[in-house]
Image (cartoon, rainbow, N blue to C red; front, side, top):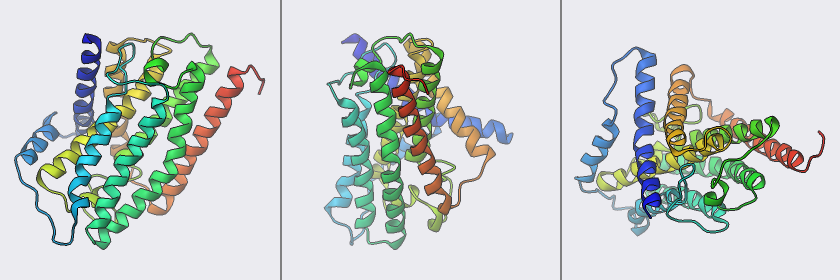
Length: 305
């Protein structure tokens, strides 16, 4: 039980720290002092103290959506181990369950945006639904590659021990980790797919769906975003740690620094894609996931390519 509690505490620390690393990286590359490391946590603390304002056009669906969004992200969060530590929740086939929980959180936010009756939020919801449908195969194939390598369908079993793999299989696992990081870019609505700093509704995707939320509802959406980021970042870090240093003290900093610095560097050095190029960008990741799964299968079966 103590190991499970330690795993959860480390995951919470990872979820709270990734945004801080992103902000600090962007500030350093821009030559600015930047905001405090945990400023995002302080902002959410203020939102938790405020009440929510609801439009007269919204229904009960809009009010329960943040709870569903946060609940789904929180449950998925509890299935992820930190390297050799054991998560609180685990069962055979939970990799599929986690993928559906992430999809459920997206659907809840899409329905809430459509419930407002706003054309802007409806436009953002349509884009989110399209990108979510396109990125889902990449997520499933990346998880299938992990299951193929380890022979299990549970995250706790997949990352239960270090793997002794040859160079080719190690490279495949590194590519799987890269795919999860890119999926994190898309799920979190970060550059190059979306820009969380933009305030132009015509180009917003994730942020535009949250325009009508306020107070504690908006705080729950932010917290759920942190949990989803930590979930995908830790899966990517575990895929790297399983072949290099399969210890929690290696995987946790790798999840925070690796993904945080990567996102900060990308957001500082490049602009967001045109909306017309996002589909091509996501389909490229899907194709890469399929190729990685195929190569992994051929290598596992000792079939020469």
